[in-house]
Length: 158
Length: 424
Image (cartoon, each protein chain N blue to C red):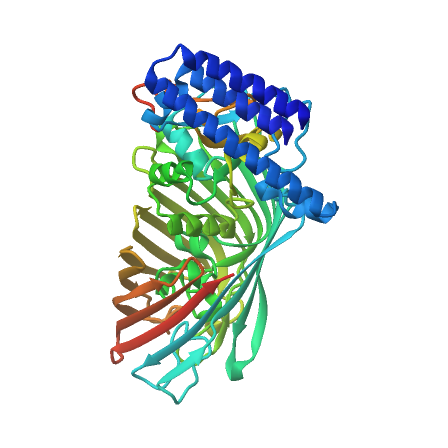
């Protein structure tokens, strides 16, 4: 608990010094993050869609993909659904079908906070998640999409 | 806690000293941040007082991981975060999922028809429960898992029979090689492996005629025991995938009109398929499959064997609430020691669109089997089905469907089908 408070306070203080938080709030940008030990640095938008839809099961090199998503109501969840072209109920039905078909071992775990997402990304080498850019923390590696970093022109989640 | 407060005080002092040099708008922002920190402090105090009043126990520690805000201290992973692992469902137990349905179907005739399960002869309409489906999955490792599907289907006199529809040991070596061993539902076309036995997953109340399960009178060998491999083929944005199956089907199907059982005594089958999921048009699937085995024609004698080849082509689009399914089939029977050949075509086309909770649908289907073939009880059947599905929530739905079927040599068949489908 103490660590959380310290890290949170440092982040807030640093943001106030740099004006970073207000800049991010203007963009509303969402980053695709993986474990920092994952060698991958760039995904095409098509590959990303396949990862998020559970069609792609392994990273290059054979590391199993572990998909983490935010629970309904979070901005990252809305961005994910928009990217996949599904409503909330369609998304749930889609994953029920994926498990039923045997195409997925389980539905993606819905997490209630970005802190939990960070823990998951740090804990699982094959983890991937969508995180609001202002919530990207140490231990997360931000992927380029089609060669673009978040907030750059051409990035799909700006 | 004392240490935390000291650090916080220092941080706030630093930020406030910076604020003195800043513009008025920055001061306002800093003021808001200070208020946020104070709010956080109050929350921490509340949580700490709550912790002091609650006796510490392992059960409490694991039952509330959702509100855990523990963050690993080191980004290098040396500190293993332990609070999240239970919440992430590190699945090594058996996971259950159930699907069920309650149906009412009325026909304009008093004898059973294809796929009407507990339909009682002598009545126009009946209630029945269809399939009660239990899906069990267990994760053995990152690459290995077990999947089984047990279906309790209603039979005559409201007796129920258990059927192990699927039991599969699955091993995914990588995206290019995913293997399954056990009893599976054959990958002839799209529908059979997309919906399996779960009515809740289907938009319509029933399966298309050509995709009906063999034990309900369907003509395809929908199940087999053997092995199956599938995977992606490096093809960039084309998204090519393959599937190959080798196994034993042993299909036994009842005739549609008199419930005589035909045992096809299938030899081992081979089924290969190729399909594309183009990256440029997400939701689109275009594919084809080729199935071959040898079966018996018991009407002509148990030693009469014929080669059965089933060719499928399909184009499917499922996205943005639209479901557009199109599949065509050619079933070819070639008798050994005879020049007799039957070519039996079939297709269905189904379209639906979600509007809020309602999904209206339309389907047209066609099948034409030869007189004298082992499927002569089917004959020519074609016609439209239409209706709507209403999703009360993400777990149960109500479907209403009307069918009009033109039958070669028989009166047209009209049906009205209501279904309550649910998952749990």
